[in-house]
Image: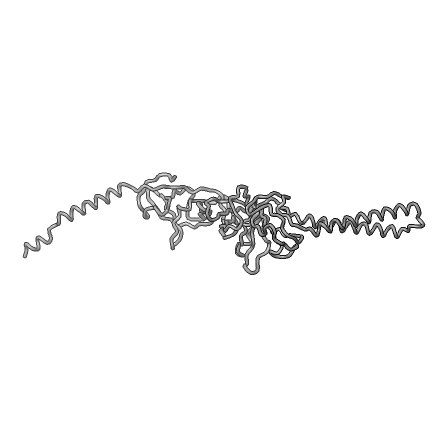
Length: 351
């Protein structure tokens, strides 16, 4: 019985060796502080952006309508063609107007002869040719000229020209098609032309932020399919909220000389509504967001210290710290790689 009890209480050599190794490892870990990257707060300006969905629209866009009825003689452009202001885009056959022009020109010729004859007669025999007759002839001449000018104007409308430099986005008719005269809708539509040299980023701003929008505020635009960020400024807004959506329509003009953007694109628009100068700024990845609040990991006397802070504006890679942090602090970055509170560390500057 005593021998059994003695065997139970005797130390296990293997267990003692494992404990010794663990203690050695812990001692080595304590003696070898963890290497962390560090960053420093800075003073600077920061802008609060609000991100909203928007869309891109052409600076100018028009659907060209036929002003005179007739059959399309020719369409000189197609979808995607670049055209210049004043360039001929399509022509419409109007034989009736050509015939009427000849008729009106003949009426003007007859009226000129009659007016000239009465004027000469009045000079030679004022008693035979009354002033009233001469005035009537002059009036008929002016009416004839006005009718001829009207027909010539309508004939000019038979040639459809580009009102501005742009791109043909839609071709609605082909040669031989009949188009009505200035009818609403597709009956008289010939082409759609858009000016894409400048695009308008259109975004509805909610009522809560509408009062802060001002022309000249910075705008950043991102679109699907590209990593580029297109910069601009608030160019204009509607001045009144839409009663149905309770939003303010805001537009920013974006130069588009290389056609990097297209009208109709969905856009993520960020508007810089508020700006602060001389704010205490830290890298956003130096912050740890937890349910209990926002924290940073400071380096103090060679130890990592978890510290609660209060943040303000955030602008991408930088975040404003309102309280809880001194300007001379040294912070672990990124915060997600920071060791536990109280861990000894050695440091190197973050890249």
